[in-house]
Every structure is written in C-alpha cells, then in structure tokens.
Length: 151
Image 1 (cartoon, rainbow, N blue to C red):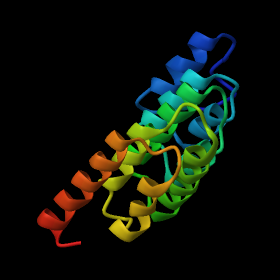
Image 2: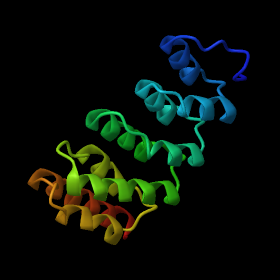
Image 3: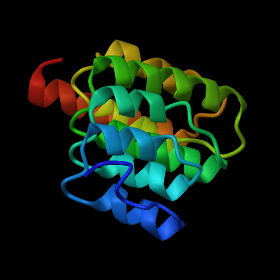
Image 4: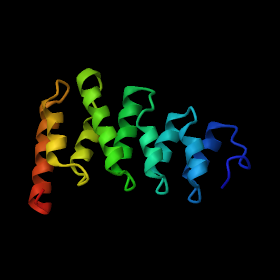
C-alpha cells in the first residue's frame, strides 16, 4: 500500500488503512503522524508496525484515557524492543507522578516484558500515583516472572 494512492480523506479512510494487513512501514509511519487517536491505537496494534514507529507513538498526547491505552498497546506489541519499553517506562514514571488518570494497565503489562529487569520495573510501585492494587499487581507479575524465568 502506498500513501499517495490511497486517498485518505475521512477518519474512516485512515482507520481502514491502519487496519489493512498489507500496510507497510511508509503507510504506518504516515498514519502514526495523523491527528486521530483511534488511528494511533490501530497502528500500535498492527502486527507489522516496527519498533521505531512504536517509539514515536509513545510521545503522542490526546486525553489521559487514550494516552494510557496507547501506552498499553505499545507495551503489548511483539515488536516493542527494549528501547521502546524503556521509553514507555519513562512515560509511566512521569504519569504516575503527575496524572490524575493513572496508566495502571500499561504498568502491569510492562512487568510481564522480559526485555526489562524486575529492578527496572519495581520502582513504579513506589511512585505517588501507584495505587495499592497496582503495587500488588506489579509484585505478583514480577514474582511470577521470577518463578517461570528465574529473572
């Protein structure tokens, strides 16, 4: 799929392009820079999205709910490499210090990723925005990793 030949005129066109199984790096990059949050989320869910685009998506902002969902999708993406996950970790730290809507699902998903050590993820539990439920979830997931992988 090429960017020029698609005629992206409506939000539905953008979403259809982001969901197309043959979308390549160029198309996905174009879509990652569009103004629609639901398209960013579709790009973050697309199986062909490369790590560098996932990294770009980490800095997108719309609303706390959409931003937190986007971070969770990025963390769960199989192409999210250590660099992307470290970027998300930094975003989570910032949001847990300042946001009124906390990125709990993304933090818990990050605890499952073997690319980061438990020592890198554990400090999230000590931040002011971490709820008791999130702290318990982080500890449980990190302990599960240690039992399964010996981290």
